[in-house]
Image 1 (cartoon, chains in turn blue, brown):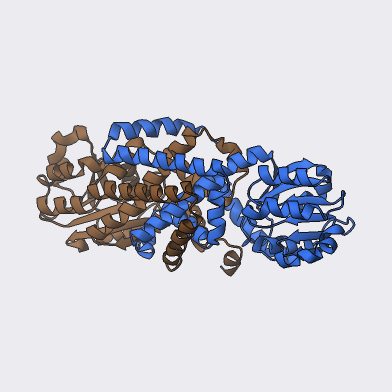
Image 2: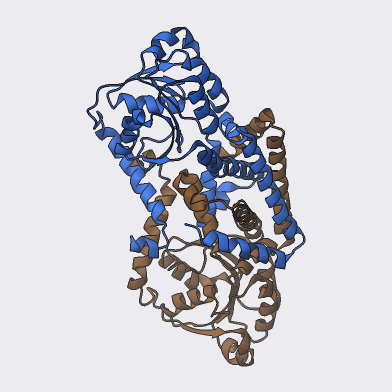
Length: 296
Length: 296
């Protein structure tokens, strides 16, 4: 890797590429699970959504029986949920708690219940409150456009009887994913930064570029590598569903408050720029330089 | 490349890596210029700065005679500038015009004069005003930490007698660089977006992360690829000289005004978030989605 380092290519970037390429190849290779455990009956609530389909495909290709419960199927909830070994909730953030409450009444005490939304405190608490069996909160840190788990992270927040989910976490890891264990509280605190404020910034820059009618094609031609990377990140955001993006910002009061604090920071720095306060800006830069450079 | 595309790896990213690796290798390969033109006497004003050293090395390794004029060498200006075929101004933005004015009086009418600062309207005009010979504005779109021109962009703004710079542009291209020709006006307009407002955003996010005392190492562990990319971009900014970063934001009134407009946009979007105005946010998202997705 030292050639990459000397050439100024971050290793993480190289790793991403290798993993993404491997992901494409490995799709054709995995036809059945590498685990020979008894088949599991799984029901995915919201399984026809984009993330739902990803998990349906992954689990079906591991020889699990996967059923789907969509909003129009609640009259079959007894059949679809009553005999499932695992029930996975894959619905938009704002419906998650309600759906958990509704689904829980059909579950056997042995059924493992998990959700895959991008919040964890509330859903995990709702699952613990309404279901007496195994509970785990999961958060796949990727969008539904990925081809496999290779190189992707899944945050897992154990709620109760985590051993019931061991096969699922191992399946994710066997397929190249990385499982990060966290408490729901730590997860939600981190996602305020990783998701909510970043979505806000990318979104706002997109709005700004449109407002200013920037000739993006020409700007990319004249650009620095950082700018090209940032434009790619913004394009990925705007390829998403607007509801998903807005949900991620509005999901909790903590997220809205952090976005307000970030907007204040932008304002404070912009004020120094407007005043052409070179000293003030350099002081801010240096304070923050110490913090940023001592990190990973 | 279709495997990369299917795997969701942007081709530009792959191209960057290949180019960076090639850059490292090609360093050892280039010992003399591929051009067999008469040796050129070059003087770089500010040649002991980091960018100055990069150009000194590149030109010296192409068998050019490179002299350096630093601030303490003005008593030798006659000797250093009077007989040069090319004089390159490589000083901080705020001194550029003054240095051009001062240097021009020592130049022969045949001397080619160029600068490499990140502004072009003012410096090119100053060079045209104070020197009667060949003039060109150059802006290398990379930092002094690069190893070679491979995969890097240089914006060239012809001022007068551009054929005198042909050998220099060819040398850059022969060594793997890309020369983008632009007017000083277009260049400066683009750099407001590519450099000034992006520096402001990255800078402000860094200040915010420090303020919030975010455990960046842990956040990277739980993060999405976009977040990791953004943290890398921010780290690169804070590895720079604070003066350089601040200069790029404050260089022109247009830059300061664009930063103020961007801060207003952040504010407007943050207000929608504070009001939990889901409809308003989705409307902004969709307006902007059309703009962003129709671009390159």
